[in-house]
Length: 445
Image 1 (cartoon, rainbow, N blue to C red):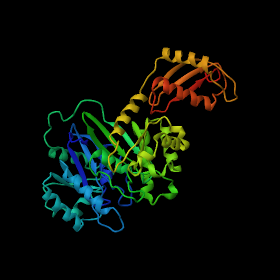
Image 2 (cartoon, helix red, strand yellow):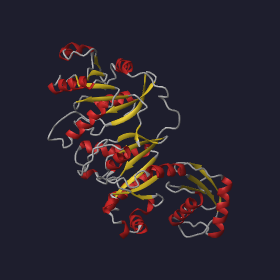
Image 3 (cartoon, rainbow, N blue to C red):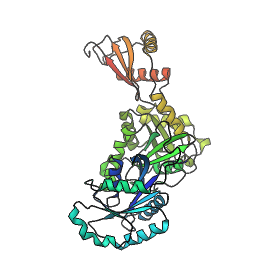
Image 4 (cartoon, helix red, strand yellow):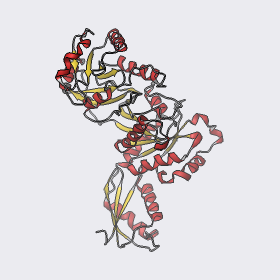
């Protein structure tokens, strides 16, 4: 598996608080990267696909270049930003026009020149034309073209896009590959279960910063990978935990973003720590997965710590479902981000559960199913009375949602609804996806 390189890559670099994430969101035309007044919001680099001058490009937002004892991962953030710059077709060096030029920014410019990549120097936060004459210090940098913009107020963005388009490499044959968009897989879970390690293993490189410290991943990081002819978009999300235990405002923002990423995914991969599951917070994250209606795969990470001959998988699953029975529709796979064991199978299972979630069952088949159901084990109301389902239709997919028309005014007993969903799942192959039942009676119209 390797990163998709078919699209020209434009990378934004600079020191903290220059407005890199604001510019990234502006060029991407969506609020994807988290923007925060505190520096250091972005740690891993974040990628997104957009169009520029009629061409598709990969746009990358990086963490700030900063060596600071107050930021425990500053060295790793800087290294990853520099690695992204080395892989770029065009680099945008962003400066803060309100702050003034820093000596370290001049050093960064010299390093970019040695890199040999096409680059532009962009001065941000210039909200009015009258501010430009005060920026003479930027002209002494000696760059061929200096661009002044306000990413927040959308000033100078058109000129920037045109300048970037001029520096892009010539379009390669087949640059815009046909076929479906990549399957979007959000890797979710509580803190310190190994989400970023799994994403790195799937990528075959250290794309996300990994640490034993909780809250290392702040923003959600998108990574495009390819396996054979198939493409996947992996979303490494911040660990979800109770806000009372969150370290600072930036981590809080990351948790909010992780929650928002769940309904945007095609498939969810819930990562659990084999050594300590199921924890209460695992249940919280699993509940979010169920509520989203998205297909789900459960990865038991750190399986390398388990003596397989001493552990039966059915016992592991019993322990898992003792706390997470409400997501027992999800396939469970033991994996090890450290050794790579079974990690590739996550992609296979993600494809399968996504396919299952798109199944549409014909009304004729459903009515045969209903006839057998009414004869063998008729439905029951909350008050314990039996009733009959007249007929059933499938309303939608992802999640598969069925409407059961009945001759009762009472709600279905929760235990029977669970039984009905399990039977539908077995009968029609809905493994890995939630199934929803809507009961319609005379009182419901």
